Structures are given as structure tokens and as C-alpha cells.
Amino acid sequence: MEFDVFGRRIIVERQGDAWMSFELGDDGKRRAADFVLPPDLSEDDVEQCLADLFHEAARPGRSVVRRVR
Image (tube, rainbow, N blue to C red; front, side, top):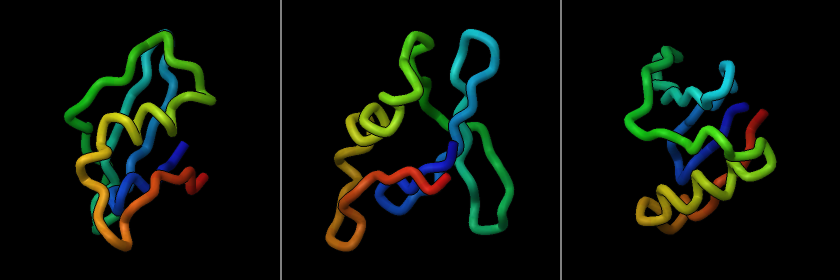
């Protein structure tokens, strides 16, 4: 899953029992993200969890978290 998180591109993938998170750079390369999602989080709740984690990054024009794909 790919998300726009207040202007940051975040990729979240399920690998076994854990969620793996990556930041997508302007160069298109993935880097390990500096946060951890709870392993028991459902796929339906990932978007809200990202919004809760990063709400302080919201700015005019960058005020939503949305799933891109």
C-alpha cells in the first residue's frame, strides 16, 4: 500500500506477522522508515494510524492522509 501522508510518500507492506514501512524519496528509491506500526493493526486501520502518528506534520495544502494505491 502506498500513502500520501501530509506530503510524504509512505509505503507499507505486510511481511509475515509485521508491517514494514518505507519512505519513497523524490528519486523513487525506498528507504526504511523511522517508525513502527503495531503488528496487530488491520489493513483497514493503517491509514488512520499514519494520520495519528504524523498529525503534527499537517500544513495548509498538506492536510490529509490518503491511500494512493
